[in-house]
Length: 446
Image 1: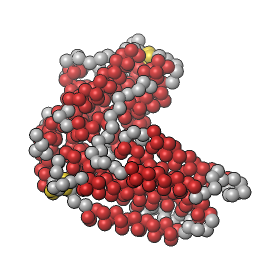
Image 2: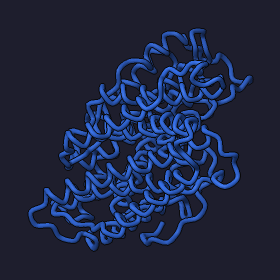
Image 3: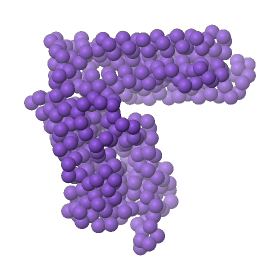
Image 4: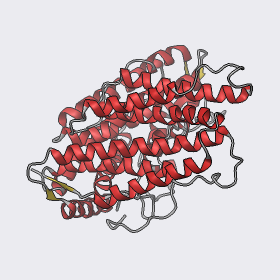
């Protein structure tokens, strides 16, 4: 791993990427195949396992050290509602004879309403902003489809809107400066703004179908939805950036501070990787004295943690300096987690799952580890950048276990991968305070 900004090699799907896309199946895998030669397989009560997984997990809000104006939130919500109100929902056969088209427009409306309802319930301001932005995409699809049906929207209109948003994104990028006073606060805010700008750019790209697909109301709706998603993401980025700038009494450029921190953390990660097993090492080679780990929860967790280690040439996200620093905090926690679990397995100090009660104990340990890491970290804001995502993994584990186990008895080997997620959460959370310490030192924050 290096600390420069060179373009990395081909991308690979990481656990964090899979979670961001809602890809829990990619995260957990399909479960280990049982070995018929092993005697007396452990059998778990599927219904009881599901009840354990469905327990409420820890709640950790993402850090957003900026005051978001109530008016900005209200404007985004009102825009979504106004777009939904533009069509005479629910559409009838008299409104639109094409039943398939009515159904798809109805689905867009339902998706928008679901996001709007979630936003009302959400207490995390950052999550609320993102939910409202996600609601505006399908809401715009409803509005655009109906406008196209009424001959009030053309492909040229959508192309013009896309070009306008892309121009706005470019101007915003050109005008941005990495300024601040507190390097930690500035890194968190600038990383989030950069994330939303990249999201806006992704939605604003010209679709591959723009010139080839038949221009139907539903095609125009999809294109207009993408443009609206870009506009919403950019609006959130601009608002947070402006609010942050307005809060600074004596801003200074932090670009060199962030660059030095990135390079320092890259060196630290490289140093930590020098004694790690080979990138494609088999499970028995990952730990001394680990015994037969195949089909076990500990083995599944260790294998996945090893697969996430930052080997030379592995995927490094193309993000701005502040985002890179937060990614390095996450990476250091991943490295630390592998080390912690490897050492525990070598010492025989890990739980062998033989019952649902053991799974309950693993899950409780994971929840406690997240809460302890938040309390023990020298900077809660930096810790939250990692722990908020970890807290969300409990829902992914519950969904995967419910899908795999059902209500019938099930052999442990079929759900070992899913259960192993709790062990991963525990050891990653336990490594977060040390990762935060390294980041603070790199940022020269006492």
